[in-house]
Length: 167
Image (cartoon, rainbow, N blue to C red; front, side, top):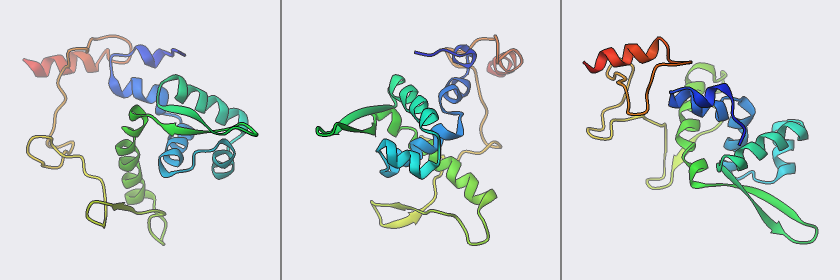
């Protein structure tokens, strides 16, 4: 597994963006979760170089976010499928999509819609409290230290700030 400086920061956002902070990785996951799963289709859809695509896919497989599966024996062909770990990135992509739709959609409107299959209605993602259901905002939440938190690279100012809130 490839380790980078962000992988050692005591911050889940730093650790996640170490893998997912590259725009190509987000777009690869968008495509795979939407049904574009073959290497050639991904390369064509994204307009990404085959070398960059191969490297990003390899890292996603190495991290357990995607699996490569054979779908044809002759000639041998494989495609990529999201693992449960990869499927859990879907709400992150929906949040990025909603933010992009709000701030960067063109005059014609958002380029895609999300339909909830359970009720058949178009919807938007909402981050909500798991206990009361109220939408979570910067104004009605605070971050507190977690059991894995510590002060170090990437949290030299944040770590003590969170620790002071605990008291």
